[in-house]
Image (tube, rainbow, N blue to C red; front, side, top):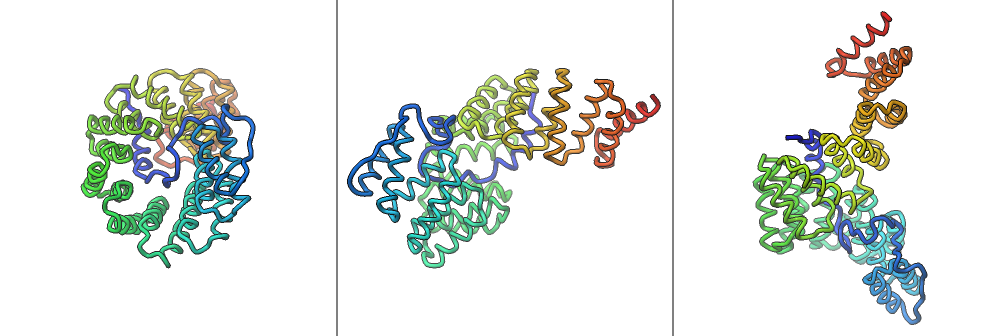
Length: 407
């Protein structure tokens, strides 16, 4: 049975809360390959007369029809006519977040907050934009500001809690989310967030109870199934994990994370055909998710499909150049397929991007295969200088260096 070693690393990441909720579906494939939010169904903008509310309603209709270019222009018209239009600001920010335009979303949210500084909607809109931009410390500050005058705002506690979990403040994050649940005990999304926080904190029994309660409140809750599957897998129950992840996919087929986790669960049970289909769907729904490409590359590599694996790893390092292991995997695959020039280029790029001594070891192999002994010696010396004393490849590197020095 071929299993992915790298998945152990991803379990830690998998227990993190999902991104802050905003309008629209997660991983909506209607714009997966059009990051500016434009659709082939509409290539020209249009104007409407009347009030800001007329433009806002027209924008909603255009968005529903997947006329995303028109929708964007109409939201702008609504805000030009009334910069303080509450729903137009909130919906336009979420529209932009869904299409990956986080910088623009943040700019509009900040302007809205400045125009309407004393209402909860402007605080929440700004926090959503900050979360989408990865500014989690700012989310904490924004939600704390709201709670200073709206002390029973359950959503503010939940968002602040999730932000705290994301930056590693686990106990404070769980405490905030417990407060949200106490204020709105029938909210399944808050139960999901609590389950995620408890899972992250290693409190598995409590996490399971919270997530089961979320399912009691909403039996088709994709996120609850997603997290319960991760929990089951962490406890070695692969069949239960797969079952939950299949239910997550059935509940919301557009959630790329659900397909990704299903791929992991299928691989763990030895069903690599199903795992491959799930990974392929995940990267189709979220082609900019570098970690999904990395997992897909690992699966293809272990299935012996090295050319496809290299292509997946290339996507991974393009999207997440800080992924040191992805550079290593890419180098290994290119060496094993005798693509020495490509391997050398990739490994040199990786060395320039990340700190991973093993990239020097692999690059030395490339030079040795190409009969470039001087470069091989120099690169091995660099590896030995950087590698830990107990590094797995150290003894082999020392032997290679001695042999090259004798020759």
